[in-house]
Amino acid sequence: LAGKLAFVTGAGSGIGRATCRILARDGATVIAADRNLTTAEETVQLLESPSHSSVMVEVDCSSSVRQALTFCLEKYKKPPSVVVNSAGITRDGFILKMPEEDFDAVINVNLKGSFTVMQTFAKSMVEQSVSGSIINLSSVVAKSGNLGQANYSASKAGVEAMTRVAAKEFGKFNIRVNAILPGFINTPMTGTVPEKVKNMIVQQTALKRFGEPEEIAEVIAFLASDKSSYVTGASIDVIGG
Image 1 (cartoon, rainbow, N blue to C red):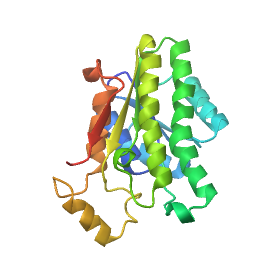
Image 2 (cartoon, helix red, strand yellow):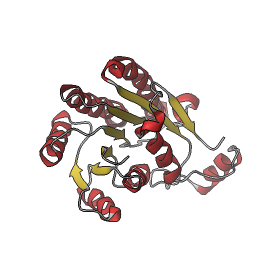
Image 3 (tube, helix red, strand yellow):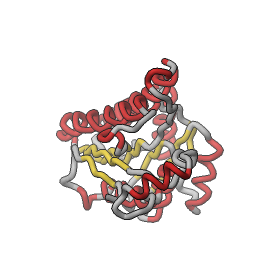
């Protein structure tokens, strides 16, 4: 990934932070973006190079996303050629009891946010004739559904479908777009899951364990690299079986 500039949302923790570390390890210059600038800065400190940077972004706010792109262009004089949509939230609740604002919040961050980042950065890539790779984080629940996660499951199914459309539209610009569907990964998001539920999930997994953020990040690094040059519109399950 030497010479590549990578923009990663949700970079302050979990899969986003692990992705920043793996991409930097493989030679990319990383822009760690998160709504919490402090955690994004902490991620950059782990990368041990002055070339990396952090930026605050609210992915569900188009003006905030545009400001993040402007930051990239002013600092690095080019748009990122690798964009990773890792920002995501949950607001769990059964359908019959879910407040409308909880449904909207998850759709706005997970689905609309991925759209806004992808649209904004792809426009700049096309304008400057930069080929590249966009990696969107979906989820295994996009296929399986999950009790209490109508909003999250719908948002992640939308991300997967949107990825396929973007791959068709961006192919002529030599911009690849792929989705990764993680299973249950040890992150702050899954840290709130009760132990009883965790044990049940582990028993249903072929590898009998949760995944680690780095195991998702390694697949992201593959999709970001030229090793995956003929892979686009794909959805890759990383679920431990």
